[in-house]
Image (cartoon, rainbow, N blue to C red; front, side, top):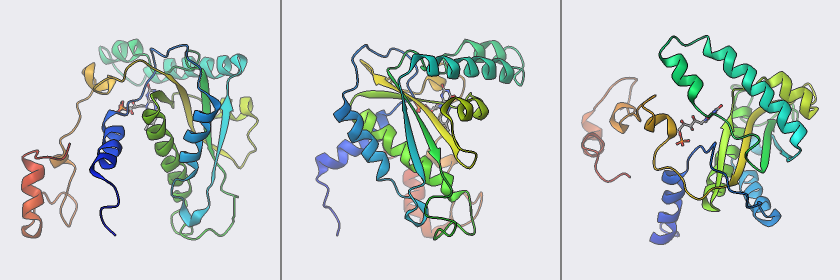
Length: 236
Ligand SMILES: Cc1cc2nc3c(=O)[nH]c(=O)nc-3n(C[C@H](O)[C@H](O)[C@H](O)COP(=O)(O)O)c2cc1C
């Protein structure tokens, strides 16, 4: 079956993909309705997962005291990690706003539970990381669904997993994968903040596509697409 998406529906999907942003600031005071949050969570829950293990859980957080503990961990980790960067980038790094924990109405911790439907999960026996990859697929679904609803989402990874474990009372076998901050925003930036600020550029597609072998940048069998990708034609 090809073409069961109309042009309009396809455009909707690509719009969500290209206009999704990591959002850490400018959340409005509008609360997220439970119905919308349910829809977004359900989209996440329909992500692919290795062996259909659905190894995710979503911990919904609005308690200010919990958020404050997480924010403290962020501050500590941000300072600690800044020692890994030399000036002038260190000051630039420290000037970035890299979380919206207290500014956003809803925080969600997405976790990985390897014991779900285990220990044997089809497809996970050779590459155990596929469990975590599955949780990341759920996060991406959640991110795109939120974007479609006009809800900004920021992923905060400058955190201590130990703090997350203690604060959220995670059992030892459960791994925190993503800490997300969600809230409505009036607009989404055109480009990633780290691109606009000159921290890093977006790579050209041509520089990340190889043909047949690692670092092989062209091949006769791939001529046409190679040319399209090289000349930046029509893919955005
Ligand atoms: C696994 C992961 C962890 C991230 N952690 C942080 C973070 O701690 N703080 C932050 O501000 N952004 C974080 N981001 C967001 C990225 O910086 C952002 O996705 C990237 O700059 C591209 O911007 P865009 O998402 O707006 O396209 C994270 C993104 C991912 C996928």
